[in-house]
Image 1 (cartoon, rainbow, N blue to C red):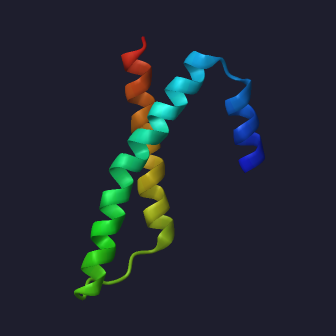
Image 2: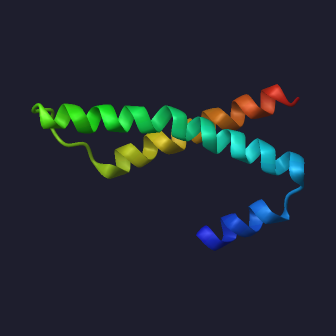
Image 3: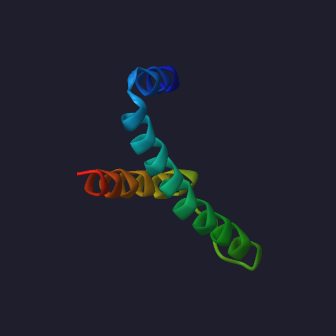
Length: 74
């Protein structure tokens, strides 16, 4: 699946690559602090989160970033 995503990214033109890169950047900017905060709070007794949930936060950020990018470049 990773190879298919890389191939899809490489087959796009510069504009499409920019939109994908902005969506991924938005996802990491949103998800990374949230996951790090939850990890830090686990140190103080918060129950562990499932890593599928953490991955879901990243994917939700990517979905929001894609939507924002589509609206921005309409």
